[in-house]
Image 1 (spheres, one colour):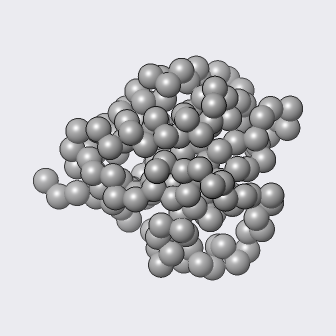
Image 2: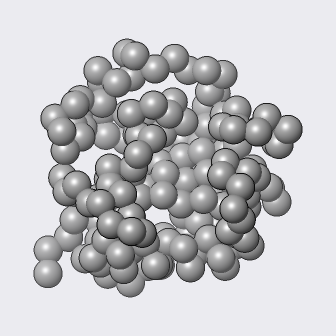
Length: 166
């Protein structure tokens, strides 16, 4: 079976967020039927939603996978759980780890469990800038170029951190 290039958004703001992202990268490297192709720098970002929570650390990973989209989602949710993620009704609340499928090849997916491209991909600086770092010439399935999106979205306090997965 052929590999599909996926892009994953990683984020954490609890329990040593940099360490959480490093651990997530190690877990991605060990996923069966997957090969980690690239990981962006880590970025500090302001939280979405409630502001009475710690800042986030975010990154984007490129993963080549033979897993079907829902299988990949299951594997990523298992990584989140292993790192202490507790799913609550509150959206955009604090979390030890969040791993989102941003893109799955050039596919558009709408199911009960999964929407790809990720619904916030065009609006979130903490996704667009790290994504542009590892895939500067990328176009979304609707042919929107990453470079055109970057021009429209301000940094909004996003800062590249000196520590990353290395």
